[in-house]
Length: 227
Image (tube, rainbow, N blue to C red):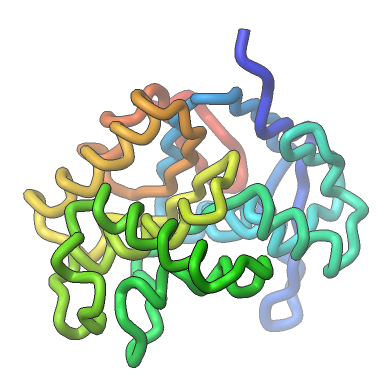
């Protein structure tokens, strides 16, 4: 039995919008075990971004509890959250979030700079990951010299370079055509199946969600069974 990476119980989150209190998350319970691959679907305004911010230790809930890899996140301050986030989580975003004037390998190295890893090891680890992503001949290309799919592969390599226990992918195929979307999903599925990486994917596309091992739907701040 794989141990839980994510344990959420009774999660609530509120925020104010135009002077009105919005109940964004309404009593969410969720367990994601090691080596799981979960897709969460939901329409705009369903609470996906709010949930992702909490899962990614960018925010904390107003009620309920969240344990990440056995650590209680709920009452951590911003510095503690930053340390946990950097050690445990890799992020992949729809917009890639690459540094525009920085080469592919330097983009991948960035998290290791903050982790205090020396230059030689940074370069070796980053080059090896880009090779695995099929970008061995693109190490020194700038983002604007790469296709959307290639940029997302750089972003995945950057997310993996710190050896996280959890990969959070927020609409990672949102700006791509069908063929490129499936290429990115092939990579994520391979990381999960062959390397046992735990992945939580946010998407609005059913054809993407079905590639995960299981799926849930977030609707009006509540989780329901998915596809």
